[in-house]
Image (tube, rainbow, N blue to C red; front, side, top):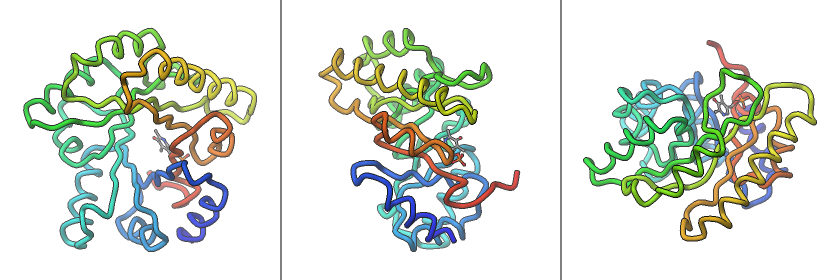
Length: 225
Ligand SMILES: *Cc1c(COP(=O)(O)O)cnc(C)c1O
């Protein structure tokens, strides 16, 4: 089932859009099944679960490190950085200045550069994390202060609703802002990823310049919390 789901999604995805398989709450066997279907990029949202899966796949299961690209997409507390930053190829969910500063200082200490997306708050839900536009601008004007961080673009989650117009409005907002930022900061040449679209709205996101879609349920089935 997992491999069929992946094949079907791939048929509809333009080649330049990366399929990020959101494997949170699913067992390592499911990731291995997805790998057999050619899936290489996985995302997790809980720090300890992320580290444990990384260690199992690349340790016990012997999957070569370079075969998988790991993304982190969950809320990250600064006391959990050690579970995520040594392993993640991209942290998509940088949602506060405090977290950004902590990542930068971890990276400098480790002599590494951490690739990040800034999470823009676009949905209607107050509970969702993320920056507003002004905060993103403030950060990017000072991008060179964060020598441990590579700014790779924006991530956003549309309002969780059946109202397609509301979802389109959210995606239009982040998409326009992304274009504005690329024009304003041409020197940030890594800043080009737009991570929008999940199981229920990725087809819509494709119309708004998504370069990555983050799909969990439509690949792995419902999560057992
Ligand atoms: C869980 C999650 C997803 C995937 O959600 P589905 O609806 O299962 O596709 C995508 N993005 C983020 C940030 C998530 O936390």
